[in-house]
Length: 419
Length: 163
Image (tube, rainbow over all chains, first blue to last red; front, side, top):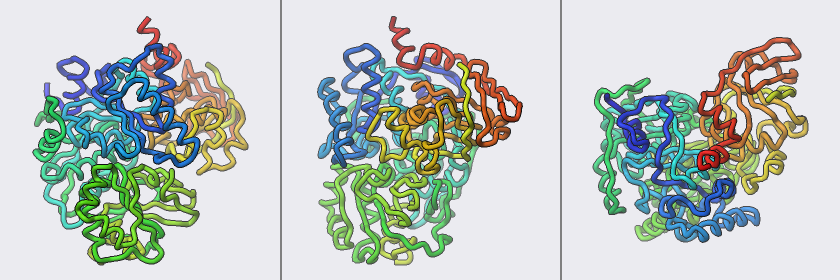
């Protein structure tokens, strides 16, 4: 029987030869992730199971990233609750302020995700890791608690949707735009409960950073997971970060898909998702005049080194417009140091950017860039829901780092071709 | 279980930021979270909702973040059941785990008007609009999920299995 990459990974983790969509499986998981917002509930539920220790202290991963460095007393208490549990359980992979960064940029960097892995996390953007050829999906804290105790979780095998990107993307077009094109086509529940599998020339040739920014947003179409067969760049990346063995899976040529969507990557313009849904996309040529107050470049979608380089390329020699607050947030300590060493911080600081320590911060309206009533932001993040970055009468426009940087200079939404 | 309450109606794609804004994710107490439920899209909700009331929404209810705080906030606000045309998957799992009953019935959603008195039997899936006298049959939970619910959620289910 022919299978998709998602079906093969799930079958392997359930100890079965093959599986088919809608099969209910109990799978062994390779990584169980939570963060400072979701871990406290997971830990509380874990205590109820009646086991003393987590199933594997190397595989239960905790990252302080949402409200760190502590934004107020309550968030500091939550982080402390998680920190004490990590110490008690002697977790190998606990990452606090100064040692980590935004979880979905961090775990691949630390070599914790390998092709063929099954990864679950109490964060909806856990789907990011699919770019490395893993099955990865977000769940809630109680599911994570159960897996922390047992190393297993129940999963229904998703049907797969195939997104084929033929050709090569043009100048200033990145994985982010290819993904927004897909979400714009199918809608925010167009892939509900399903696997989004990305293939085609554009995907095969894509850098690891851009691939991660694509699968990151699979949840924005409602998907259970986003996934890509590892390309050479991915294999090189993983091998440079871990010595652990792994299995590379790919879909069979005659695997069954519920639907196939084709795109000509060369025809896709930089896209902007207007408020208040990620599916509400417009090409940069058709955005009209939208004045802005803030630009945020960072997050688990676009806070990696390539994103920093793209932003710097546009910003070099320019300044943010007088009325725009430009906030740049390298997603991890490693990205931060690399960007600094490459001299990108000079470019950002010359552009009057505030360069922040790694945090999820403004993406979810937490801190470090919350919007006031009536304000508009262009952000390289993943959600533009009502009030997502602050006041319910503020607006978030999602774009790639080049568009975000150009918009900062222009003081309105615009592309780098205008600079 | 049987529940009775008045209907609060919402549109499609109600996301978890709508249900409980991220700024409130510094607590994991249901009652505390319930105080700010639906604040962004319906500031009067917590003033008007009474224990047992029912949320009725269009497609993709609970999309967005994985925060389990969302079903907890709904429960904390006193809501007994959510009826929708469809649910986002993480929210669905979370509700199962936290004990918030969900029923899927596009017909009921179309038939119910905001403020109607609604009766729900979660075991049989029967939804009755007492105000209009109409009734509908929701999709039953798949057998495995019925087992989870019967056990009282995932953690109790695991405890049972471990003996």
